[in-house]
Every structure is written in C-alpha cells, then in structure tokens.
Picture 1 (spheres, each protein chain N blue to C red):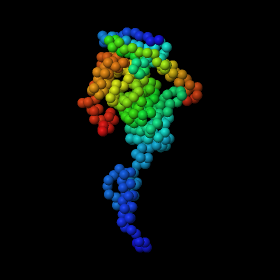
Picture 2 (spheres, helix red, strand yellow):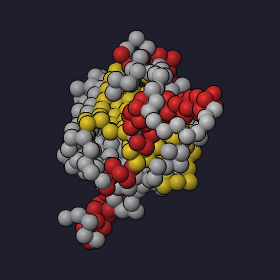
Picture 3 (cartoon, helix red, strand yellow):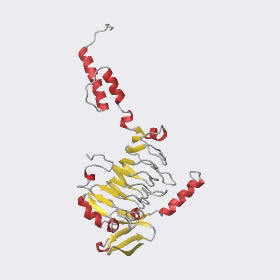
Picture 4 (cartoon, chains in turn red, green):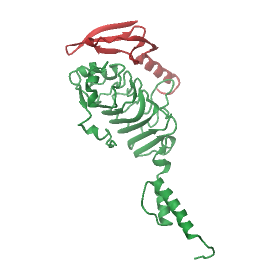
Length: 73
Length: 267
C-alpha cells in the first residue's frame, strides 16, 4: 500500500511517497521507486506492478556469485 | 605503349568519371582525381569500416590509442576496455537494435578507468545500463541520439570514487534510475537536453554524490530555459534543487548552447 511521510528542505515542506510492498509508485504513467514532492502540489500516486530492486542486496548477491564462479576475487 | 585496340574514348571518359565520382563520394571529397595515381591515392585514403572500427576489432584486437570511433554493430559485452591506456576519447555509435549487453549477475559494464571522454550515440532501443564502473579518470560523458533512459546504478562505481565531472544527456524517453550517480563525488555539471522534463525515479540518484547531496558543495543542472520552472517543481528534482548549493541554469546563453560537453558543435 501507499505510504507517505513529510520532511523539510530549507524550510519547505515535502512529502515522500513510497510503497510498503516494495513496488514502484506511479503517476501520469511514470514510475518512481520513491517520489518526493512539495506538499502544496497534492500529488497522488498509485501502486505499480513492478517491484523496485533492493540495490544493496542485488549488488551483494552479484558480488558473491562472481566470487563463487571465480570471476573475481 | 601498346596500341592494339580501338577504344570509344567518350565511353571511357564516362566510365572513368563514374568510378571517380564513386571514389569521391566514399572518401568525402570533391577534388578532381588524376588517373591512375589520383584514383589510387584517394582509395587508399578512405577510412576502413566507414570511419569507425568494428566493436570486436577494438575490443579483442590491438590496443588502440588516441581518439577512437567504435561502431557497435554487435552488442557490447561487459568488462571490456578495462584498464586500457592511451584512449583519449571514445565514441561508440550504436547500430539500430544494438546495446550494451548485461550479464545475469553483476551488471558491471564498460570499465572506463582510463578514458577521459566518452561519447555515446544511441539508437532508440538502447538504454544506459548499470555500472559504468571505475570511471576513475573519466571526466566527461556525452550521450546523444536516442537512448531510452538510464537504468539504476548507471554511473555507480564499486571502486572508490568516480572521476565523472560533466554529463551531457539528450533526453527523448525514459528516466534516471536510482543510485545513478552513486559515489560520483566529482560530478558537478549535468546538462539535460530535450523538450520535456526527464523524470528522476529516486533522489538516491544524487544523494550519494557529494556535491549534490544536502550540505554538498553544489552541482549545476543545465536545461532548456522553457523547462526551468518545470524542473524546479518536478517530483524528486524539486528536492535535489532545493538543497542550498545546487542550482539550475538555462542551456541558452551558456557554452552548452552551441556545443556538447566534449566540444562537438551542435548542428
């Protein structure tokens, strides 16, 4: 489901929108893994079908794979 | 001189002119050619491969130096050009449908540790894949043609910090992926050309690039003047541009109005 939280940048209020299911959030056909908008714009997002990639996990797994396969040390 | 045949001189002249025209066209010259020495010289002067080397000649043949044009007539595999010294500028022209090939594991791609200037000329089906890794000495990247966006981790480096300073991108479709400029701590200038705002998938593209993150020394985004206010209010861009030292400037009136970041004039 869609999750939002407020934060500030130099005195301006922003709202961060993400999916607690690890999916992209979508607005106007554009997918965001995390959407940060000025609060006053009131932008609304829907939860997309695609999963975002946990970049750290994917990189660690890839590195481990390469070590096991003898590709790198 | 042997005189043993009757020759239609008019036809001979026409035939020689036809050959000379073909040589001039291929060689990109309009000079008159004296037969036979001029013909021979002009043919020998024509660059092989239409002005660029086959991707595999570059990758698996002799080590080139200087400014290199690489015709990507095949998908370019990972890890190539790693550690190559002496290339001062690499231009990769992608044939239609050709792209950088990804491995199923580590997405590490073209290792550009020693190539100061990289120019990529895309062709609609290409995307910039993840991990242009170890760009320790690469300072400028120019992307022209039609690339359909930048994947996550496009310039993410897994070794220390990237040397990327200036990125000049022509946007037609697609977006900027997460962690695109991860550890690109020298990255200071981003030029985005095109008629629409290029979506930014996640502020993480910039938040680990020292200059662009909150409290950083600041980076400068150059966009068409008509899009400045749109970028300032766009999702995720509004946050990045809201950090104190980051700024947005118009391409018009800057040096990038008439030339790409590698100095190539804009036609």
